[in-house]
Length: 391
Image (tube, rainbow, N blue to C red):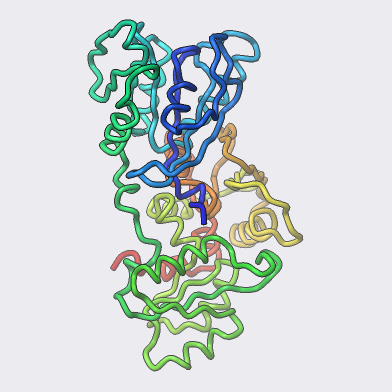
């Protein structure tokens, strides 16, 4: 089974036109995935390639358009290139013997602001080598005739890997002792795909298996019986956020309770920041705009969580006439008019993208939270839902 896109290391490849970005990527992947040409601007859009890059593991390369494409169409290509920055874990900046110019330096400054590790690759060193001062991570090579290029790149990449990729964080396994029982409450409703369960639930089960825990999977209608069947109370109950209220009334206060979405708020983002963001709900006024961000596009159903249920819970909690907008996809809209941002569970995106969105919101002074945190806050059970994370 292929690794999920959201769990792959996202590597962005950047640079000016005709410095050899596509040639570099074709050499590293050992595949002709990007068109190589002497004509500037051949790469017209972001090209993605997923592969196993040992010893790193599953990665996705994102080959971008040239940063210095000055044509009208080129400006749109560059705009798409810059949007990729918020999605990547590691950046590779390709230049040649002319060194770095303002395009690359501006991009590197952005990487540093977002705390994205980056590697500078000076290509065409078979023609001429130019020493690049003031930067630590520089690889001097020639895509054309450096037989050790792939090895050198892998070695440099391993040294740059983010800690949260090398030491993959747990979803729930670090919250309970090994051999303990965790009950997972999974409603089978309109949002449950036929014949399957949704990604966060699958990943949580796998995480608990890896942590030597016992998983007990039930619907909310069988939860009471499940607890009674156990000789020892479960160490934790995890529920789908939409069943939070019903489940909280069944599970005794002595048993820790949280939701899949809150687990993923910690895994993919910053739980403390999301809890702080939820507290801003009490400050909302009539006419305030709220942005609900979804990482992936999907067909909204009749009682869609992000388009129907959360807006209803918000309006009921605040008693205010709020203006609520939904936005789906990797792009980040203009947020200046919003008083609150609510992010989805981020099961289909990586941690870097969520952290980038948190950073953008913080810089704009706009509170940001996520689905599970908002739902538990609106239902009055947030303190209980996050208590296990403070032990």
